[in-house]
Length: 331
Image (cartoon, rainbow, N blue to C red; front, top):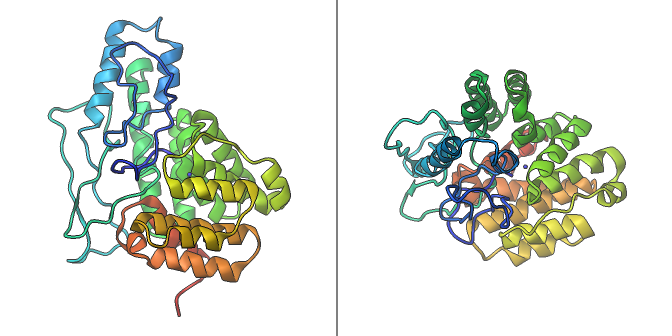
């Protein structure tokens, strides 16, 4: 539920780095949607220690952040996304030189196809901030933890929710610092009906990234199952303004109540990603209201939309996993 998006301008999700956050001038602090660093968990750490850390360490961290923006993410193989000639092709751009800090963080996806589906994803990257933590504080377990998170994400995409959770938990055992950043774990917990643990995961994430719209919504979804809609809304986590219009509207709908049909209609003629997210969160809203038939209609629409079928967005896989867990099909 947000390490940020891998999107073009105005269609991507923000990093959650406060605009006023000021470290040393060597750090690239102003996030943009053309080149996002997805390192918001690192900034509070560096801010806290900015006067005690050597300048060389600050510079080293800044170099690693800049270096990470040269990467792209390769399209994960999944049972839901078999290769085909019509599918988008994702390429990996290797860094100019090897870096000890990042092996998984990506800043941009290159889609090679005639009619690109612009990504409107949430956080299509692994929480690899421990790579810099390793440089600052020592320890090697983060590499194994990152690999466990990779395996967990792949298993989730393939529909093995229990297996994905086992890998995410293994990552936390290897590197406890990761717990507050593995939003993917919260999604797995939701689909295993472990709602209390899921809500805790999302609250931890929002505490680290207070501009995370989707984690706020997913916390609500977990707590609606635990306490009912009214109490979940009373406990609703208020976060900063999401740059995506569709997610601003979805956030307000969950926070204050609203009409999911209006949300879908509002974005039905917009970019493919916006229609996908409107349908996804309309379906999830209906599920929180205990209306499975309406939820099924919109979740199937999301999973079968062009974005749901062709995007490498983790949430596109989630829409398919949701239908799989509920035994829903178009037939």
